[in-house]
Image (cartoon, rainbow, N blue to C red; front, top):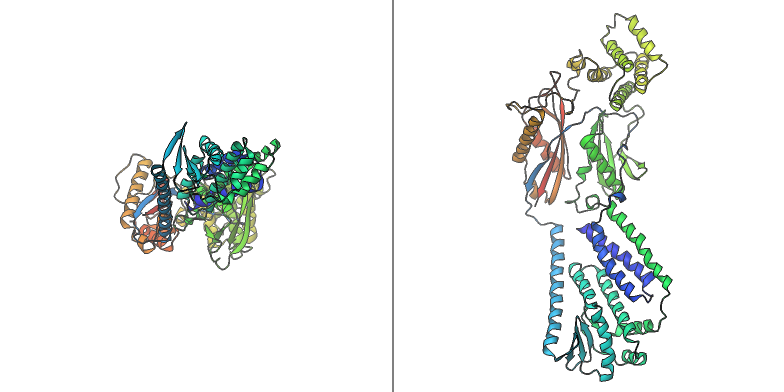
Length: 621
């Protein structure tokens, strides 16, 4: 709502500046009237118009990457959103602002009704005569003159000679329905009583009404008309939605306009400038999303743009969508920056969005992320030259590079499969019994003339192992994990027991998803997932402390993103949460950690670890 009000005021300011600079001095009074009415209406409608072709489209292939840094976790199973209800009985600043706006509207409405009643009283208390389709109200003991709809109010003190020219003037107001214009702005003044530009719109329109009426009425007796305007100061009702004939502050302008030569027809081209101006506003309105702009903290949920990636993890599925929204938000909101924080062991990186005013954690370095459709600032703790690993980091990088290429390709050729097989045989080789044939096969593989990208990376890995000599425990386990996932033996390989804690299987290929203990048998994976979703929803709903709504003085929808894994032993582990308040994160972690030990997921008859993503929506009234 606040964003809509700001956009409306901004658009009205631009339209009024254009009017003051280019159109105000022209004698195209009817065109100017149309301009003021249409732009006032456009300023109310444009913030709602979203043209998809104008939006800032984020490239689906654009991913922020860091030197020699890969990720290992597979795509998590995305659970159905848990919706919690909470009530905040405390009042915040939003409540007071809303109360002031409503009170202002109520007072403005009462004042409008008071003035309407005043006009109605004038009609009933004074004598009236009918002339064609208009009614003339003769106000006793008054020299005022104005019109309202089909009523012309004339003071009895106005002499007969002046009455005729004044009547012609007011008849123009009636015929052209000028009262409707002013009532339109009067209604805007009730709703947007705090907006000064609505008052300016009404004043400019009222002036135009007088110029239009003067230009029509002066044709018969210009001398007499000037005398009427230059005679004594007449009293006029101070009502913003009537058309007064005698308005002291406007008389000089009216005389100037009457004497001014008509504008040349080519000056009408100025109105064509309205087209690019409106298009620019459409682009702004389309590219801006209220959820992507500065809002009150309760409405702006920055946690929805946060996500974490493990080493070797592909940016796909739910996280890919979060990443796209994260980049679109940052490119459209320069008052916000990204933080990319790499864990101390460089096994995980967490992306999040923060206000520029927020204190930057120590150790983060400023950098700019750019693409063809925009840029944004990022603060990150970039790894050192060897990725923070002691000497052996280069070999781990080579292993990661092989895994990355396999993920990119999606399949392995016969030649590439031969390299995987050689790696597998190398790890199973007894160090005391040198296998000359294996050595020759590796040399032939490395010396092949035509190599694919994966073939080259496997060769580089062989060379790195040869240069280093012995592998560390971490390097050996990383290579065994890779081979367990991609070799023909798969989970039945001799390495499985050593690396089963490291292996995670995505939902897309897993044979059997984890289940709650004592669950019944299901006919399909989909039925099992629905049952699991329902149980998770029920469990979180029963155990989440909704009193936090009061404690933290929350309002609106609070998003909480929870990532966790069900290990090969059924235990809930590696729970992480992201929310707008640390207390919400802690509560989400507490609740998920209370989940019972599950029946673990299975792949090829082996119990495996399965990652999950659980979105929680905490709606506070």
